[in-house]
Structures are given as structure tokens and as C-alpha cells.
Image (tube, rainbow, N blue to C red; front, side, top):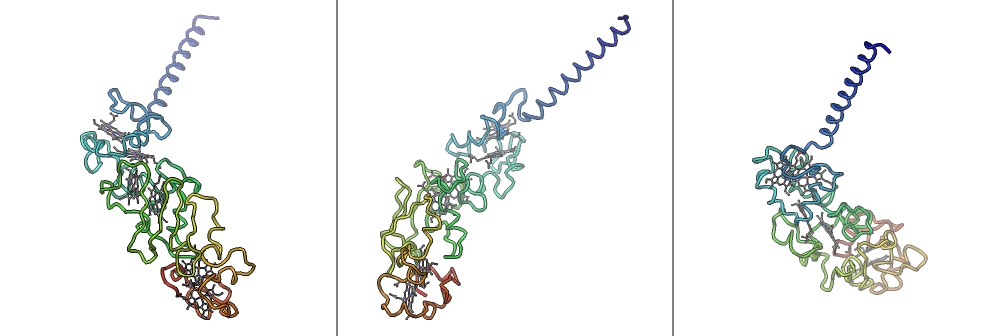
Amino acid sequence: MGTSNMKTTFISIMLLSGLMLSSCSELQEEKVPTESTVSVHGKGFADASSANFHAAYVRNNKYDLTLCQSCHGNDFSGGTTGQSCNTCHNKPNGPENCTTCHGSVNAAPPNDLVGNSATTVRGVGAHQKHLLGGTLGAAVPCATCHVVPASLASAGHLDATPNAEVRFDTTSATYRSGASYAAANATCSNTYCHGNFNGGNGNVTMAWAGTGGSTSTACGTCHGDVTKATLKEKAFPVTGHTAASITSDCSTCHSRTVNASLAIIDPSKHMNGQVD
Ligand code: HEC
Ligand code: HEC
Ligand code: HEC
Ligand code: HEC
Ligand code: HEC
Ligand code: HEC
């Protein structure tokens, strides 16, 4: 090998390693944009795949966002740091938007506070079944089951007790005394909608995060007898009606709620607190 050849090889190695070095540091910069020489938060605070991600930090500090406002500004637009939260949290009120910590389609889970989406987890449960309404009944608002905070800082919202508080709205048309929620096992009992009404099946206990699904919404579960053969017999209240009234169409008297084949034609008239 001649000297000129050795020289070119040497130069190409130098060039190559130089290229490798520069591309390596470029990659690192792209991966951890928050890392600077004097980083306040450490690596990965803005990186969802990092163990140091800020969501976990916020959770571990009781969701107290005043901790962030001192530097990032009261409106989170950057404050003395110049780093706005609102570029990523771009809904109204930035990080204080109701869906930042829970919910997605609306403020209710899923996702729950720790990111669960399965309805068998109590933080998620039957929220969307109630909130979106359906073929059986109208949507049930949050306030029927919770005190709804006007803002993040509202009294009773972020309190010392670990789980969400459930309290039934006593002013609702569908409230009946005796209705209760047992946080110990996440069950509701004695609610109006699930049987606690004149002619209803009485105290039916519902598992909030159960696997019941369609069986708990079948005709006969709240009034009547689910084991009977026909839809009519299933839905027919066990008390109150004369035995003869089962021979006529339910829709002759309940025409605003059901049709002749017992389909609910107006969910807003069913389970609304009065017999239509
Ligand atoms: C003592 C002042 C201070 C406090 C308090 C503070 N930050 Fe920061 N934050 C900074 C500074 C300065 C930066 C700029 C980058 C750096 O130095 O890490 C920053 C950057 C960030 C970034 C990265 C922004 C980006 O686009 O890369 C996130 C995310 C963040 N902070 C979240 C929070 C959260 C959440 C809280 C409250 C729990 C908080 N910070 C509290 C000073 C603070
Ligand atoms: C680079 C984008 C980015 C910036 C900047 C940013 N966040 Fe976040 N933040 C996220 C992402 C992504 C999540 C996770 C959302 C999810 O899991 O659905 C999150 C989650 C959160 C949560 C929810 C915590 C939880 O466990 O539910 C809070 C509160 C929050 N951020 C506050 C802040 C605050 C305050 C700032 C500014 C100081 C900030 N964020 C800046 C991207 C960002
Ligand atoms: C039919 C009653 C009902 C309605 C309506 C309802 N919730 Fe809930 N909610 C519950 C129950 C039950 C729990 C579980 C409480 C527990 O863990 O013991 C819960 C839990 C929660 C939690 C805590 C989640 C977690 O991670 O632990 C949040 C947040 C919540 N609800 C918000 C809402 C919001 C917002 C709305 C309206 C958009 C709403 N809920 C409507 C009954 C309801
Ligand atoms: C920074 C995170 C965060 C934001 C933003 C947030 N919440 Fe919550 N929310 C929580 C936590 C944590 C709980 C559980 C509270 C507890 O332990 O009692 C909760 C619980 C709830 C509950 C269940 C009832 C209760 O108080 O326990 C409702 C309803 C609720 N939030 C509605 C809202 C609404 C409406 C908004 C917007 C105005 C909102 N949340 C914004 C963290 C947040
Ligand atoms: C002859 C008219 C008539 C017919 C037919 C009739 N109902 Fe009723 N139904 C009523 C009246 C009146 C009430 C209200 C009773 C009260 O206020 O106590 C009622 C109430 C109800 C209730 C509420 C619970 C209760 O007992 O108050 C249900 C559920 C119900 N009917 C279902 C049915 C079904 C299912 C059928 C068909 C198999 C049917 N009804 C047929 C007149 C009728
Ligand atoms: C989750 C509980 C529940 C289920 C499941 C249910 N109902 Fe009802 N139903 C009620 C309640 C509560 C009432 C009491 C009256 C009211 O508030 O509208 C009622 C009343 C009625 C009435 C009387 C008219 C009215 O609306 O007041 C008819 C008819 C009726 N239901 C038919 C049915 C049929 C048919 C099915 C099956 C497709 C069914 N129900 C399933 C809770 C239920």
C-alpha cells in the first residue's frame, strides 16, 4: 500500500467518524428536547415514554397545578420560563381543561385518572352507558351522581379522600330516598331507574364496573320478570296492573313510550321519573 492510499483511508475514516459523531448528537437532541445544560426538571419531563414524564409527577403531587404556575405563569402561557403548557394542552384553559386528567369524549372516564379505559375498572365503569343515553333512556348528567366542580380549584374537587365522591342529586325527578352508592364494592342500590319505583322490582343492586352489560338492560330487570318468555310478559309489572291489561297492547296506554312491538320509541319518556 502506497502512502497516498493510506492517507485517503485515514482521511475517510476521520470523515466517517466525524459524520457518525455529529449524527449521533443530532439524534440525541431530537429525542430529549427538554434537556439543557441546567435543566430544572431533568430528562424526559415532556416525553410521554419517560419515567420522568410530568403527568406522573403531577399525579404524585395531588394534581396541584399551582406548583407549576409559579414559573410557567398563571395562565400557563410560559411565565418566566418562556415554555408554554398550552402548545400541547391546547383546549380552553390549557392544562385545567376538564379532559386533561380524566375523560376524552366528555369529562367522564374513560380514561380514568390513571389511564384505564376498560369498563370493568371502577374508575371507568358504566359512565358512557349513562352519559350518552341510548335506546332505553335519555342521557344522565354528571350532576345526578356527583357534585360537578366549576373549575379545577372548586371546593370538594381535589380533596384528601382518594376516590371520586358519588352523591345522588336529591332534587332530580329520578331521585328516591334510600338510593345509595357503596364505595367499598362499587355498587348502587335502591335507585329509581333500576327498580325503586311503584310497580318496579324494588331494591336492585347494580355493579358499577360489572360485566352484566346487556343483561342489566333487558326488559324485566327493573320491572316485571326477566325469566318470562315474551317481551310483554317480561316487562309487565309484577304489581299494580290488572291481570287483564296484559291481554291488550302495552302501547294502547303507554303510547308515548312504546310501540305495539314494545320498542321504546321515545327514550326521553322512559325512566324519566313519571309514568307515561
Ligand atoms: C422553578 C421553576 C419551575 C417550576 C416550578 C416548574 N417548571 Fe417546568 N420548566 C421550567 C423551565 C425553566 C423550563 C425550561 C426547560 C428546562 O430548563 O427544563 C421548564 C420546562 C418544562 C417542560 C418542557 C416544555 C417543553 O416544551 O419542552 C414541561 C413539560 C414542564 N416544564 C412542566 C412543568 C410542570 C407540569 C410543572 C408543575 C408540576 C412545572 N413544569 C413547574 C421551570 C419550572
Ligand atoms: C410537549 C407537550 C406537553 C407540554 C409542553 C406539557 N404537557 Fe402536560 N401532558 C402532555 C401529554 C402528552 C400528557 C398525557 C396525556 C394523556 O395521557 O392523555 C400530559 C398530561 C398532563 C396532565 C395530566 C396528568 C394525569 O396524570 O392525568 C397534566 C395535569 C399536565 N399534563 C399538566 C401540564 C402543565 C401544567 C404543563 C406546563 C407547565 C404541561 N402539562 C406541559 C403533554 C405536554
Ligand atoms: C350514573 C352515575 C354517574 C354519572 C352520571 C357520572 N358518574 Fe362519575 N363516577 C360514578 C361512579 C359510581 C364512580 C366510581 C367511584 C368510585 O371509585 O367509587 C365515578 C367516578 C368518577 C371519576 C373518578 C375516576 C377515577 O379515575 O377514579 C371521575 C373523574 C368522574 N366520575 C367524573 C364524572 C364526570 C365528569 C361525569 C359527567 C360527564 C360523571 N362522572 C358522571 C358515577 C357516575
Ligand atoms: C389536574 C387534573 C384535573 C383536572 C384538570 C380536572 N379534574 Fe376532575 N378530578 C381530578 C381528580 C384527581 C379527581 C378525583 C378527586 C378525589 O380524589 O376526590 C377528580 C374528580 C372529578 C369528579 C368526580 C367527583 C369528585 O369531585 O370526586 C368530577 C365530576 C370531576 N372531577 C369533574 C371535573 C370537571 C368538570 C373539570 C373541569 C372544570 C375537572 N374535573 C378538571 C382531577 C382533575
Ligand atoms: C289499560 C291501560 C294500561 C295497559 C294496557 C298497560 N298499562 Fe302499564 N300502566 C298503566 C297505568 C295507569 C300506570 C300507572 C300506575 C300508577 O301510577 O300506579 C301504568 C304503569 C306502568 C309501569 C310503571 C310501574 C307501575 O306499575 O306503575 C310500567 C313499567 C308499565 N305500566 C308497563 C306496562 C307494560 C309492559 C304493559 C303491557 C304488557 C302495560 N304497562 C300495559 C296503564 C296500563
Ligand atoms: C334500567 C331499568 C329499566 C329497564 C331495563 C327497562 N325499564 Fe321500563 N321503566 C323503567 C322505569 C324506571 C319506569 C318508570 C316510569 C318512568 O320513569 O318513565 C319504566 C316504565 C316503563 C313503561 C311505562 C311507561 C313509561 O315510560 O312510564 C313501559 C311501557 C316500559 N317501561 C317498558 C319497558 C320495556 C319494553 C323494556 C325493555 C325494552 C323496559 N321497559 C326496560 C326502567 C326500566
